[in-house]
Image (cartoon, rainbow, N blue to C red; front, side):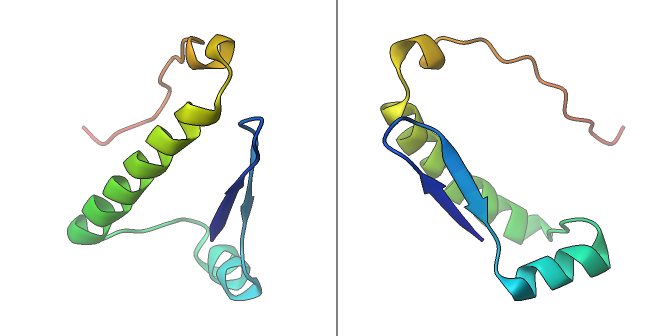
Length: 71
C-alpha cells in the first residue's frame, strides 16, 4: 500500500495487485497487537506530515469519530 499525498493535501491510497488479492480474500485488515502498534506509529507520522500540507481551513475542520470498538 502506498499513500500518495499531493501538494494540495489530497491523497490517493494505491494497492498492489497482491494486496488487492489479499483484501478480496480476507475482506478485512487484521493486525496482531505489535503489528497494530507499529502500524499506528507509522500512521501517526503520516498524519503529522499530511497536516503540514493542508490549508488552514482544512486543518481547523472538526472531525466526529465514528469508529466502532469492541466492548
